[in-house]
Amino acid sequence: RVHGDSRMDDNSQQSTFTAAKHSQFFLFNLNCLPHQYESSIDANRMTALYFCVVGLDLLNQLHKLKKEEIIEWIYAMQIKTDPTDTHGGFRGSLYLGGSFQIGGSPSCHQFDCGHLAMTYSALCTLITLGDDLSRVDKQSIVSALRNLQLEDGSFIPSRYSGENDLRFVFCAVGISWILDDFSGIDIERVVNFILACQTHEGGFGLNPSREAHGGSTYTALASLWLLNRQGTVLDDPKRWRDAVRWCVHRLTQGFNGRPNKLDDTCYTFWVGASLSLLNYQGMLQTDELKVFLTEAQTTYGGFGKHPDCLPDILHSFYGVAGWSLTSNQTSDVPNPVNPKLGISSRAFAQFRPDSQ
Image 1 (tube, rainbow, N blue to C red):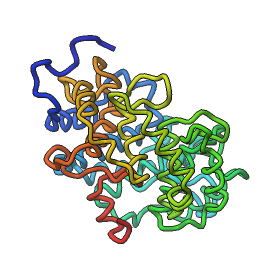
Image 2 (cartoon, one colour; image 1 turned 90 degrees about the horizontal axis):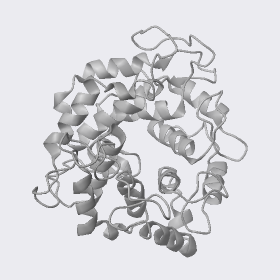
Image 3 (cartoon, helix red, strand yellow; image 1 turned 180 degrees about the vertical axis):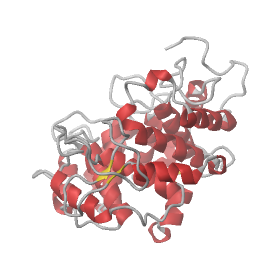
């Protein structure tokens, strides 16, 4: 963190969105990740790619990319396996030592297996780049989903992982929606798990009996919408009212992720998208929220976690996505985010025009 030197100039016009700088920031990180990411993100390069490519799509800047090269890299991360195997999908990178092969390669290690978050990121990025998914090993991914769902309805992200929560439920549901194949998941158990995660506060925790959180509230609601089960919340007056109240209480100047926490750029998307899904997006049209986001922009392009923080790709992506939810000016973010799947409305409509 660097205080005082990364914020926009105090003389800058209030609530000015610096789209050109954000585009440059994503392009720079796409071509050369700073060394600070070397140890923390090596296994998650697919997610870093998703942030940069979808971020550029929101800004209508995909024409600046070498799309075919990116598509080939994504497919090279696909695990080539027997369709009935249970560890298919996409890796985050070749950090375990596998060889780069066009179209994908077999597992090189017992831990070299598909990961739900990486598979979700890969499929969303391919959709964004206009790929038809014809080379995706769909049957292998569906088989993996069956193996990764637990008895309570939740999912682990990969076959040797010990964590299970709403993050991976959303990834599993998003993958199934993209593949147009829900045969790999038990929908009723998924829905029951999601509803069990709603707390007395009104938001959703990562697991039942966990504290409500902005990120898990979004993943819960978006999963229900992708499953076409949004009525379990929208048509239940108490569930809907409690969820809306909890989300509204996250807004001070910006949004925070839970009570007694600082405002944070990324929750403009997590909580803002939740309010949109709850049909309560009027709360996003506040001058104070725009000022917070403006102050979180940096002179380098991108957004920091808080004002006075250096930018990073996660907060930059969710800052741009969040801005698109708060602004009626398409000149700021020409392709606003679709809150159901986390890609642009343009890409969503082009991929599945009947699901608007």
